[in-house]
Image 1: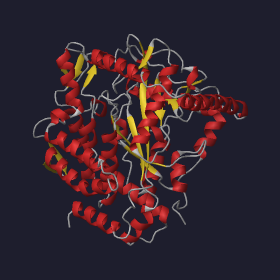
Image 2 (image 1 turned 90 degrees about the vertical axis):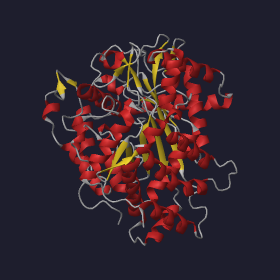
Image 3 (image 1 turned 180 degrees about the vertical axis):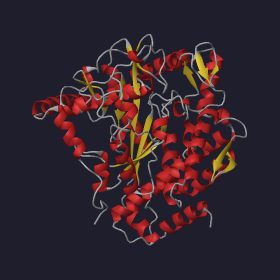
Length: 534
């Protein structure tokens, strides 16, 4: 039986006596990054707006690498529309608290940058935890440069229904403790996403062009578009290519996704392995921390992967320890560009398709990632990022060439039953509509966001900067027309006030030195006696 048929068979067997096991209880969250820029398009050099509260403790609005790189976080929601509405509300509140001469940049790739020094590193106050976040970012700046860290993205967080797991476990005849089965199933999902996740940047990539100020004259294989922009004619997401988040040092880490124990062990090994290159930077130089340590990774978050297993960690708890003690809770998909076509950076069909795709990934058989798989995954990610819309583009599957369009159509055919199931009780059929919309993009790549973006620029004779500035201004006008209600605004203001008080309390309660705090943090171990559930 083919892998697609296995997924379909499992779906039908799950539904026997449990018709609504997939249609209730799943949770969706969005995290979206946006650069604050001035009215002229330069990266803002101002501090985090005080009306937004504390970037350290606000549950909805924080910063990523840069003081200018805002990050918006929705709480888990049961439906895509609820999550998008929450993201829209966050944007409306942020715009109400930005300076008059600032707006949010509408694209993933930054523009009008003036070297590393134009990207200010985020500040989080004087507490040990705030200092650790700042020093970690200093380390990133020394290791990779600041410009790469100014790239924005959208993260899609997803957990399958809790009621699904015991039913799925019984179907597979699995006798492990339930949480172990849940973790194993999420890792199966992750492996399948790695193999087939190239489809997401192909369908939703929105960065086929970059500003020359970002790369300067060293553009590699990119072509000149208009004197001010570099591009590739068939690119989908240069953000996900070698000019974006890729890093040759991390490619050598060989993080394992065979199971949760192998993942934790390989990631911990990378965090604890000294790096001669980073040792040359120094950790404390002239009394100032340059990085948290001189190892291959400072902490877990430094490892870039376009899909991550996640568990909400307690305050001060290492992510690997949280995973080791309580297992996988959800997955974080990091393969989405910020869509300049959407004021909130993402739309409903994207989210519906992603949810169905993740269900598809968990239902399929999922062998361990082989050495050949690793090569195929890396090749496919790069090929789709740079040449995804190229006619007759071939990808690699199990070491053999397969046409992108053929493979994509196979995946969509395998998702049809899942979308029909998720649409149960909804006469509008949003999941099937989302699937059909993406199938049209596979049949006609000119429908894809990356192609539409280039066509719009060409029709208006715009450079990338001019296009991104126009879209940023249009989004600003959109949120000006959609203000919050008094009750909604009051909720965000209350959270901002609470977060400021929480930061003051954290700072007042610190007693240990920063050096001692770091030592205690890194003493936490996720490796030792078997960590899986008893």
